[in-house]
Length: 81
Image 1 (spheres, rainbow, N blue to C red):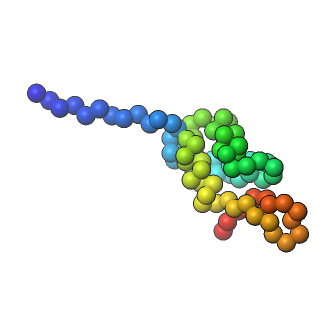
Image 2 (cartoon, helix red, strand yellow; image 1 turned 30 degrees about the vertical axis):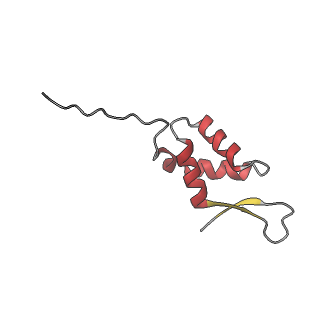
Image 3 (spheres, rainbow, N blue to C red; image 1 turned 90 degrees about the vertical axis):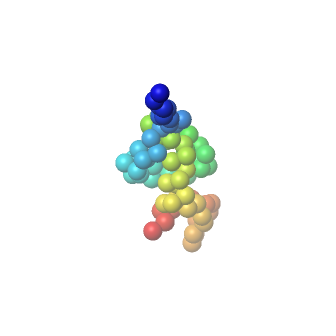
């Protein structure tokens, strides 16, 4: 008797798909000054359904910070280098 392993399909999109779309994610962050992090994740996932929400959140944590700098009136997104 053979034991067959069942291959699990991903629950959401490809976890590495977002890496190809980092520039689009950065553009979305800069264009949505008033938006919160969750709305950016939802918008990115709506535009590119092959990107999982978890992977989008992971990349946001790595490359984006929302803070007030200098003469800023309100916190805005900046790229972390």
